[in-house]
Every structure is written in C-alpha cells, then in structure tokens.
Length: 250
Ligand code: GLN
Image 1 (cartoon, helix red, strand yellow):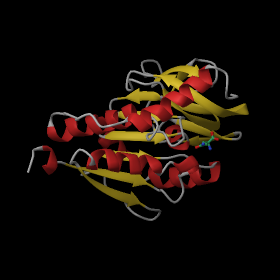
Image 2 (tube, helix red, strand yellow):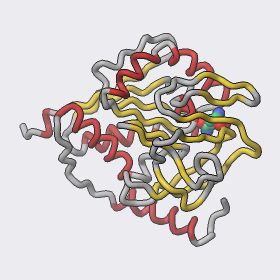
Image 3 (tube, helix red, strand yellow):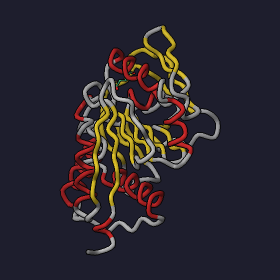
C-alpha cells in the first residue's frame, strides 16, 4: 500500500437538509472524488438537525447556503456548538462556508431589519442591503491558480474586520458588499465565500486548497498529486471568458 493510500480525511457536512442552495452538496461530492482519485479515503459524515456534532476528529467542515428561514434554524443549533467550533477553527481545522454559511461565521448577520447573533468565529459582520445581489461572479484569489467562478445571490452585505484577509478580489460581479471590491474571507484555515454554483467542481484549485490544508494539519505534509482536470478547467475557463467578454449578463 502506498503512503497516500493509508490517509483518511473526515468531512463533516453540516445540516445538508437545510443549507443546500444551488447544489451546495456538489461541493462534498467534489471533495470526496478528489480525495478518492488520489487514494485518500473520504470519511464523510452528515450532521443533521438534532445531532450533537463533535469536531474533535473532523478535518474539513462544510456549511452551505440557504434561505433566511433555514439559515436562522441552523444558526440556533450552531450557537450551542460555538465553543467547540471556535476551538476547531483556532486549532487550524478546515472550514468552508458558502453564502448563508459564510454569514454565520461573523459576529452578526441581518434578517431584514433584525440583527441576529452569529458564531463570532471570524471578525466580520453582515448587514442588510437593497437590492439583493444576484448574478455571476469571478474572483481572483491566492488559493486558486484559476479565477474562482460561480453565482451569488444574497441580500446581506458582509464587512471584514481589520486584518481579516478577503478570499480575493472581485473581477466580475459584486462580492462581499458590492462596494469594497473584495469577496469572501480567509482566516486560519477558514474559507468563507458567497460563491455558489456549486463552488468546488468548477474551481478545483479551491477544492485542493481545502484538502491540502487538511492533510497538512493531520499528516504534516500535503503532497497532492495533480489530477486530469481538463473538464473542470474547461468549464472554469468558458465561464470566466464569457463573463469577461460581456457575453453573460451580470
Ligand atoms: N439568506 C442569506 C441572504 O440572502 C444567504 C442567502 C444564500 O445563502 N444564498 O443574504
């Protein structure tokens, strides 16, 4: 057995029944396949409403996006696990959060005029804006050799605290607040983003960044053999070029 065949990564998919907008579950499928193709065993565990999740053996936690109602339900559950989640994040646990999930990472987020307490894992907050930000997006980011492409749909405007690194710079679309020119956040091994689509299948660089961070934390090194990404990169390129050429409306 090769050294890589003996590696396992545990993935916790948080509340897939509630937070699964625009195929966010496809992110889990993508992580699973990119691990399997390299002989890394994916141990994927779904966390459902009513479960008491433990993050002690988790390598990658994923939380998707959802409607305000679903986001609120998840937030109440996760607030009970706030300390455990904070310990996971501070210990370098990998956490990928999309849209509604991204908003939950901060100190607070907005449901209309109502301010809802968030998990406070990353120094950011989200307030409400009009109109909704809906459309395609492309982002330049250090975590991906290709522009990150996808789709955003959010009423919230996210503001990063001083010193919180954005995931990247908006090349097309609106991003965090439609004004700063930034999209998403990076904090330790936490990646927050508004990019749905789902995020990972068209952006293999982001998937590999998450897997690499998790391998480093668990096994001390992250030698990721390259995969045949021709299809993924073609999808990425077509979308990016069509956006930048003005062939697709914002
Ligand atoms: N409910 C949040 C908003 O509208 C997040 C939406 C989403 O996850 N797409 O801002």
